[in-house]
Image (cartoon, rainbow, N blue to C red; front, side, top):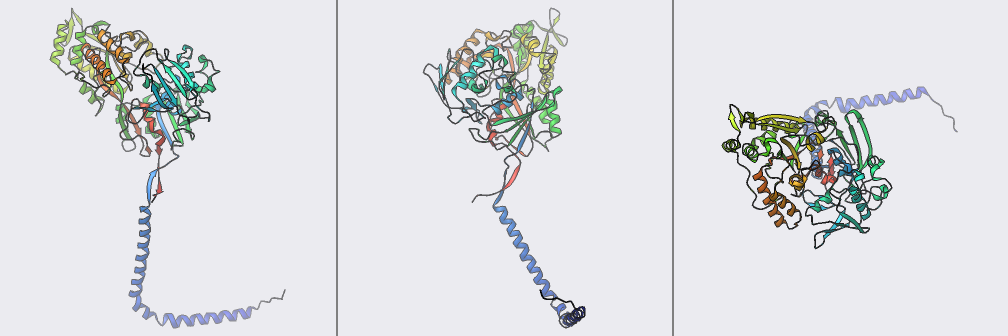
Length: 587
């Protein structure tokens, strides 16, 4: 390496030389020409401004063009949290009894048929169905691509196994009506349902038949099935799978069911990555969850409660379902056994006022089935006529004595019962006021179905412990209301809560079940409806609606969607999203 040296004097000399040259240059080209610069400043300012405008315009042009090829779309892979009314003690769908359990059943399990967005039956696990000439055998072919969430194929033996479970009394399933139906596996993808007689509404029953995996449960005793691990960690075939169940507060049954997207779902993977069912024990608890933003959507609340939700934070959709609220008269007990008294209350009740009390736009329902289910010359709705009501009561021997009607010194007294619900309680109060104006003395009782101490089923429904029951009846997708109005269903375990019995009505209901031709069926139901209105075993007050509350970030139901029951809101759950994102437009 050559030797390197550093001379400080030489460096100092060079720096002074550079300094002198710089000062000389500044004096010559800057300070001596400053006056010229001031003369040219206008030109300089103009060019600086012009360059700024060009740069700004270029930036705006870039932004404008970005907006032309970018847009906002719904985001995928979000988490949706919905509040539902519990309790939820099982995830096995054949034991579902609460709204929360039915919601979980719909998300985790598939059916052979299901209701689409238009409210019509469509294929789900099934890809075709053939009905025999005698209308007693239904041959259903399964889709070849349907799988359980563990990847194994769904076979016809799974369908047969499920039906046999429902027929076994040891199972204690909440799904009934399958005892006389025989299910036979023809091959791996074909199953036959053999009916003892023609039953026109049978296809609708296939919507309420969740299929269970025979391979997993075949060694479990039917009596032990409810307590089996399958009830907390099931293997289903629906669009979502169970991740885990979170117990928040055992004292109030507060739980969160965490679900994950089923990427192998035969209809395609849902857009949501996570789905949470937040379970609450009361509708008041659901309202508190909305106020504290624990969830971004909720259902199972009354119209009254939905109307109190903050419209700045939430949107509210209200859709009719195939269910009705009725004042059911106990036709075999006390004063309500008199047809004139029932008819007097029928024409003396202003149902329009009751619908207005429930909420703006509450649908009318004065027949025993839902609007649009039956065509033909249906009877008109009863016209409110207080004078006719008074005449009928006078004819029955109940005459006015001051403000109260009496017969042989005894006041016309009616006991009315309803279940705890904000809407029903408001209707009860209004109905009580209307009937008091007719001279009727009213005693009311509100029972809580969630309170085991009150045991509403045993103490009220089975004993028929009321004169008038203000209650909701679920009608479903078919107008077959045999269970509510046929005389054979008046027993303790029947659903004929009015104890209604009439030969003409019975004949019409029975024959309508055995006719598959829609025109003939409609004619039978028209006959029944006329007899039903004439006998007045009940008053149809209004059609029930389902209230759905959600934040602006939630995108779920289509505007023209029709619901048969509240859980049918999940029919298009594959396309639900939460949140938005910026995406590039395709050319």
